[in-house]
Length: 203
Ligand code: B12
Ligand code: SF4
Ligand code: SF4
Image (cartoon, rainbow, N blue to C red; front, side):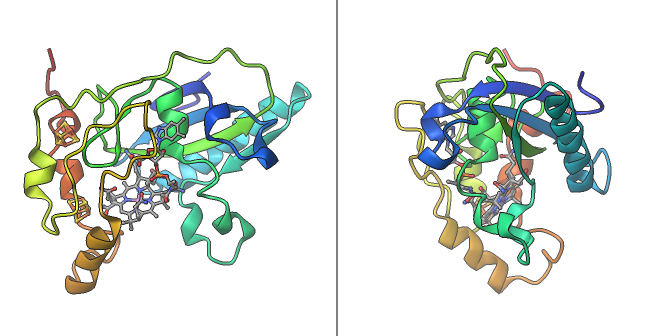
């Protein structure tokens, strides 16, 4: 049951895990369309808790990576976000590819989604992963990024960790401008993406 999530998928995330987490090799990727509610992160955490309860009742273990893990500076979980990325769980679950903008692109919703991940040892049947970028010749995010951070590379499962965005440049913009108080940065690479535009039809 999706319980209000916009997208849910199950991926085999073995390839992305370190030895400490290798027993939790199913990643449940949960996404909410940003803008549906002002408390997207709280809603994602609520959905993660529902999944944890469901798994526990069936005797399985689970471990949730919170959506905003690096902002909870006072909690241990802040140190864990890099152990498995929400984007990894999403590509492994077949819910999208990594765009030139470095974000997870879902064919229907683009990169407007916020993501959360629940790792588990439940033997859930994984969805088919997405193995290649579908950005094609588009380079709108490359041309419109005000800090020149988007390098323009194609993502693929052959080299899934390749750095597509110079995050130091992306971060530096925030220091120069003061109108992004609520967000980590400008987010133009989300809004300019054709896949993020509501009702846009793709062939
Ligand atoms: C630190 C951080 C930032 C930093 C640095 C960016 C970065 N490294 O991603 C800064 C402040 C710059 C930033 C900016 C933004 N961020 Co940010 N950020 C994060 C955070 C907290 C951690 C990301 C991280 O370092 N992960 C670890 C590294 C290793 O993984 P990754 O880069 O996330 O993902 C890579 C792997 O998944 C790999 N991969 C993909 N498939 C597979 C498969 C396998 C098998 C393997 C091994 C690897 C692999 O490819 C990915 C891209 O390189 C996450 C939340 C979280 N807890 O994950 C949000 C998150 C990535 N951010 C998000 C958003 C929305 C933004 C902004 C749009 C916000 C804004 N308005 O400014 C911008 C966009 C900038 C951009 N073009 O990426 C969303 C992305 C949603 C999406 N659709 O992808 C996230 C997931 C938050 C969320 N819960 O939804 N962010
Ligand atoms: S958030 Fe802004 S500065 Fe950062 S990569 Fe996207 S468009 Fe560039
Ligand atoms: S704007 Fe174009 S190149 Fe950039 S992520 Fe979207 S589809 Fe890909």
